[in-house]
Length: 509
Image (cartoon, rainbow, N blue to C red; front, side, top):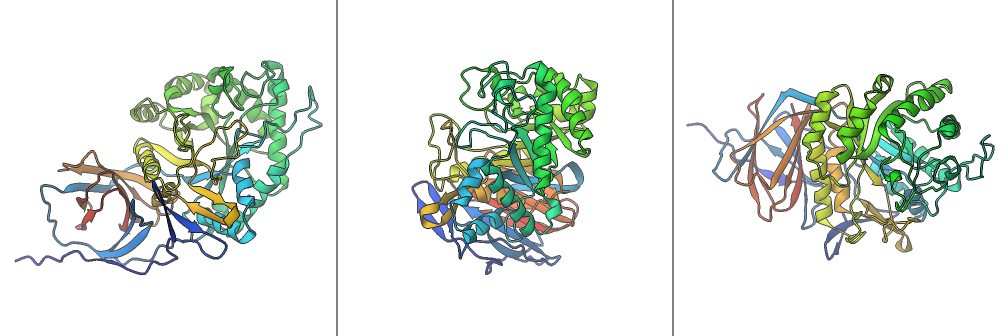
């Protein structure tokens, strides 16, 4: 008779510091201040063990246990069975990150120095969640206190009045701090884009909409080089660039904040003939160029048009996407990958609270955390290689934002208490970002025998240090019996996942 080892799940003292919870109507946050913040350190495993991290709607945040594998699979009719195969590899994963906007920097600055450090460490430090990407806008966005560019002096064709602003001092200061605390500062990848050229360079003479005047194509490229030079002089090197943020927005005169329209054919022409040539000549020869930087619903048109320009097709290494208004199914991502397999796909902006008829900040919202983790699973299941959040930190109103386009953020600062709150969105991202480093591969994971198929969502990876990582969401209001089978080994995991929960399971491949 075959001996069966019963799976024993024992929650141990977390390596790192646990969450100090604070409850709100819609869920819980974890409170951080100058002396205390929850941290995340991943313990080492033996061959016969797996690591299980769990976050739940009822208040657990990244609690972990070290467990033994089952020796016999006891599949019941109610079980969901996940079967993974590390030999079926898909795209490489680039990593995860967020944006250091003016608003983020200004909010971080409202905290004491020690609390600022705790916040940045939470994202980028060795006991943080493993961010390796940071998006920095070129000049102002709606998440600034005013509409501005770096040269708002009318008809300054010499760009003699080009200047960084005070907010850049803060952003650069925080980037330098991030580089000091990261386990490997060379692992930080900064990418950038501009929301708008100075309004006097535009046909509309308006920062909110309109196209760049063709006679200023080269001058605008010179303007962007000045930004690169100014940041380089302050020790900030930039990894990548998109030609412009959400180029479709700029076609609409009623658009409420900074934007500039680019038809894909015009974006291709300007990027090849002006932007790349000018940056290359200035010494920025290894920049990674990403096309589009807009919503999924324009992906096919934009990519197909821009890559008709052969030189643009050679220039752009990838396509940048935002998560808003995903009215098209994710299959469009796979279709685009299959047509352009040498171009990576990357989410470069995401946030909740952006719809006009919903609350902007909902403290403790589990639902918004669930939106985040499901979006990451969906995108990475369809050839997307990286996922970058929007503002690293906002205030309780979801700003500052000069256009009153307030939204939510994984971290909300509470300056009057010298505290910040980590929301469920923060932990949703961490279930990936801490465990799926750059160079990991998405691998095959199939679901079977599942009466709860619609409520269990999952994805699996093989990391560069030969670990299997499985991320799972249970959307249901009831627990689900779950079996994970490794097709390449005899390892079997039998667990019960609680209702409304996120999970990361990791073991040596």
